[in-house]
Length: 147
Image 1 (cartoon, helix red, strand yellow):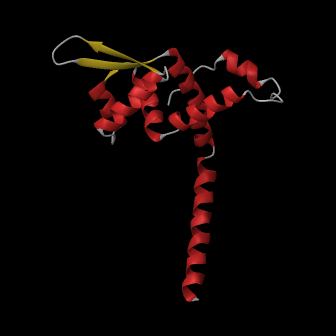
Image 2 (cartoon, rainbow, N blue to C red):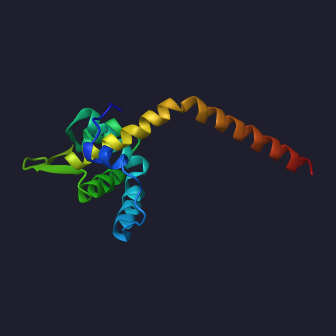
Image 3 (tube, helix red, strand yellow):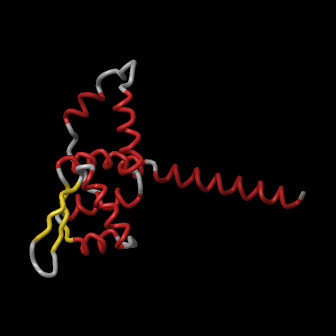
């Protein structure tokens, strides 16, 4: 994923102390958005549109790879509903539909870029932790099988 420019409003908020009370409406929105965008397909579509710009529906499916047409349709519709993508239908036969990230979608891409950089930075540590866990699980399985 290409590095996105930081949003100055978000960066300014990061410098402030955490609020003592949380607005329940904001908390509900955060839970809702995380539930929607943290899924695999939303993030992959976000990345594809960020790196390739405007894509036709079929191109988007090819770039994302491994996604069914039904799942692609559901995901881009939800992203459109949340204001992350703009869907443009061109009045031709056969219909030509393409998708572009909105400024809101681009800002989410910038936030996701931080997760990408974090994963890149800690890749070896995560791989080692997973290998250690697998070894512990295998040892536990062998002990349990003996009993």
